[in-house]
Image 1 (cartoon, rainbow, N blue to C red):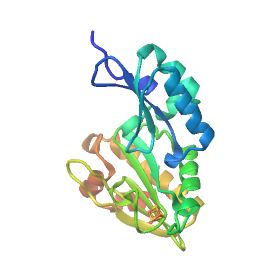
Image 2 (image 1 turned 120 degrees about the horizontal axis):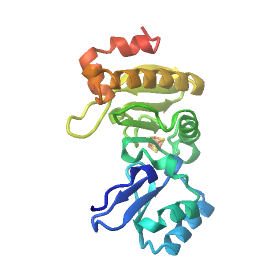
Image 3 (image 1 turned 135 degrees about the vertical axis):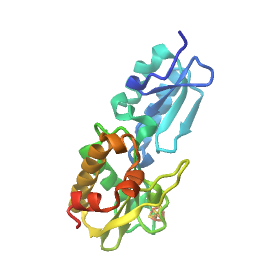
Image 4 (image 1 turned 45 degrees about the horizontal axis):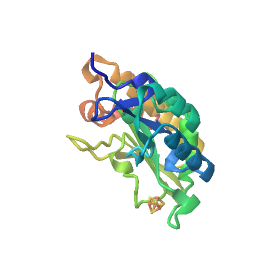
Length: 227
Ligand code: SF4
């Protein structure tokens, strides 16, 4: 039998049908120098010649042999369970006011809070993509994420229902001027609604935006206590 992705170990079969790409999980795509060095050392140790920054702000080691997957994860200091959802779930954050002169809010620390509280998002069979931008410039495209968050001077603006792909959709703003705790609470309600809808017969496996277009905004807004 031929090889395939090993999703339980977050390893994606490459075009050579022999080796795998594995991921270093990085919140907001940021890493300190010791982490970068550890990843580079792991790559060299296991004969990896190239790294790829993924669209989900992870760092992929390309061309890892199957027998080296666990060792490479251990050498990087990455728990592969953090990356197991791979392309189906991610939190993408811009540099925010930690690094960017235009940033209005601390996207990176908020991304860590979201990750600690929710990730991986359990029992949601459709994709869960979250974009956290530090200002309206929207460098991580929150308007095409299932949950898009924008930092503004008075707090976070939350939008839902965006997607790229075959049928692109723009997210709709459902709340503004929220602090971190209020935004996390609202996200919990959105995710609960999404989880329930993604397991119902008529909306099974559908993206949040498609569910909203089928059911209207009312059910989500009521589930979030916004109506
Ligand atoms: S969205 Fe705003 S804060 Fe974030 S990187 Fe772009 S310009 Fe900077």
